Length: 445
Image 1 (cartoon, rainbow, N blue to C red):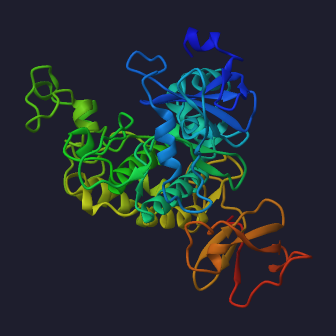
Image 2: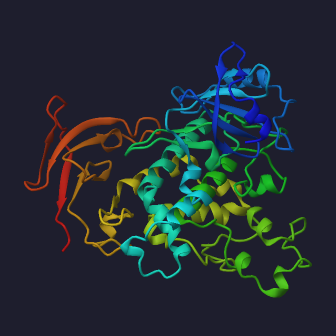
Image 3: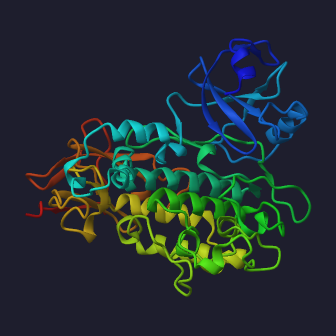
């Protein structure tokens, strides 16, 4: 937060005369910065100029009048501007209490220092270099794969609904996606600055560095649903596998003659810097099935964090879709498969890491035996029922075609008795429907 912003604490007024006290900085991106206010349900977004100071040339009043006129899907979880600031560039937006950006999934410097002061958990005791183990400690503490899959699935569903309405979001990044806490967190997109109809030609595009689609970074096209799909896929891969999908051996360990300042670019107009080439889509995907030039040298094993269906979506997006944008899968497929992967995962009670339940008889991270499980099944869907407590909520997707809006809505509640291998409805709720079955798996010993 700049000194000028600190000086304005307690003095920001909106167009209606409401006063806001700025608290800590929540997120910062290429277009602006978001601050928490003294009202836990409201935040302030200020556009920034090239110098990092508030951009006073922004015509926010007209811009947000246009945004409010867009045909947004009903009940879409995108935080729209509530009011424009009076004497400063910026606007007020809704932010649910206690929400944090997806950037919290990344191991920040402050968190690294905090974790470094703690003793490593037993399942990581064999790693001699503590700095190597810290990303895994943070991965487990921040919900492991299961929580990441659910949060990402909800972002995908929001984007899919926007795209179905003919709209493009424009700047998908961890700092623009916010999540709550709990087993079923709300997820919101907070930045409506670039929300607009897809344009056939013309217009401008804004992207967060490292997440921009190749055609936008290279200047050959503008923001479209398929560029949203690219940015989302980069965020998803990095969040799940702990490695950027294009930072591989070619970038991290280049041949001497290929990585120098005087190296020839890989294509006309391409930057010389290998990192910039990777982010601009000039290098192959680290897991490309047909090209191992830039193969992965780090990250979590994909078999532990991705289902076969998710691996195919990433392959199609970053393989063929790198140079053929129309090959990228639509966001609805991502919402479906991320949700399915979440429902197939369990959290290890010993180390807090999560894994695909039916693929492993022991935790692949700490070796603990897989606990007893209950799997709820219908003709449409199946899911591993959480083992915490004996009452579980059964969602809409178990009983109906997958809905982008309603798939997580509670449809029934069941009381599970693992010892008796039985399930009944919770008193005061509807009877469980015909066609719902439960499979009880014993603890693996």
